[in-house]
Length: 349
Length: 259
Picture 1: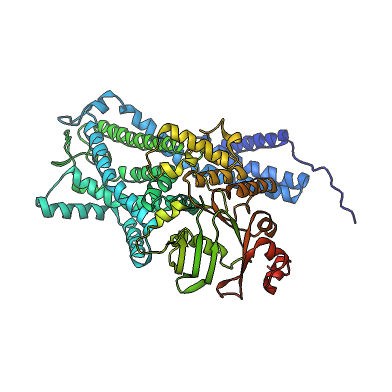
Picture 2: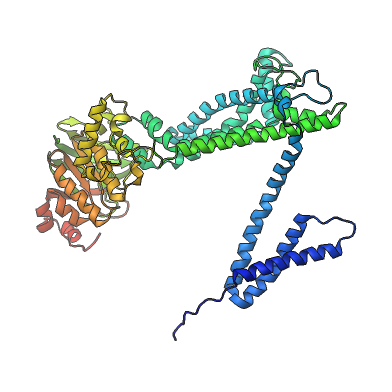
């Protein structure tokens, strides 16, 4: 028996678009007829329209194109819908923060602290300075420790001790942030007496949270470096430490930087430990080694939780603080991408 | 100039597992010696002991002596790093450094070691090494492009240039053409027969025609069975091994009856 290859019948693009428009139209009419006192929500119409569109296009496709293509269309539709739904919270979050945060996203917000401000005006400069300093110190502590630990685990670690280190890192990953804050508070109380508050202690608390993230991501990246490159370098008579420094780390640098940036983004929004050990203040404090230091997450929390006489002014400042935090994290991510591109292995330098 | 390599009752072990047992052979300077044998017979393992690269694998160790011009490579005061500067290696899969340009790849042995070499010497080293590797004409106009952009055969010749740039005395090649097409293989084989004027070359190959074409001497290794150590069965002039081997095993392998 011979099989004849026939030309496939497919739905034309025009048919699909027509079905899509009819789906949306049906959805709109259903909503218009059945609405009582409620208003028509565009997103709801669109979602219902997609379902109707699916109910139209799948049977049509089954009849015209056959079973396989109908299933293919169903699955493609499901995958795209899932992606769309995953995007909804993100888009909604960014939209909310941007629209509400822009009200106070102005010069005064970035130019002044909250000292002597009870109603309108005031700003988060003290919190921005605090967040930048504390996060920077936390990064300065965590990056060398984390990177060297991962180099040890990948390049040198053998046997029981390295397994033990891996387990400890896993345990550290699971430490709740409030516990890290209490730890730093207890540690600094030993040296500076009870009731100590300083930015540096906050940085130590953040390091406890950041180190395991750096170790884990750097370890993955270093393991991705092909063994052949290490062997090539060793076979040229290059000592092991130079091989790690000159071959392994440069090859993995893009991934290492990305991992570090993700770790920073992870701790920059921490509130609980900083509330405990860095405290909160309305005034500027540039010195991380003495006195309370404000940070952006604490600023947002504090503005919202203790609204003063002019509640709207406090809420506006809270949203502007949240927007600033998101912008900082986004800038860090973009920076990481640029660095990763500059150091991309296939690149030329 | 090449150096003489003597293996004296060499055993190679991975932990408690004996991978290669009791190999003694002498490799003359400025010759090409081929190691042939079925997979798992320990020929690559043995090759790596000649520049102590087997030590990279945890648990690997060697009993017996390997001497380079009379100097025991496994002596107490011998640093494996210096051994590897004397004995270069080319691997099965081309492995140029992806972060480096073609030029920097050739100079990798100097640059990675912080050796102080003047700019003009750099250019001379790059040119002579690439010329020896028959790659100069193809890449001379794009020395600053990344090494990863070359074809597989070119990458392998780049790796050979990189290995000879540091002027070793011995060149070990671990199945250097098994990942390459016939034309690139031809280029590498031509290169091997020229390089033997300056270096002692040991080449591991699965391709018996290749062993017959490029080598002066051939060593045939075999294993008795799964879990057994690899042993040297026969070591002689290539022409003898391929035309008139003394061992039945060798003849069976050469004629394709097993392996």
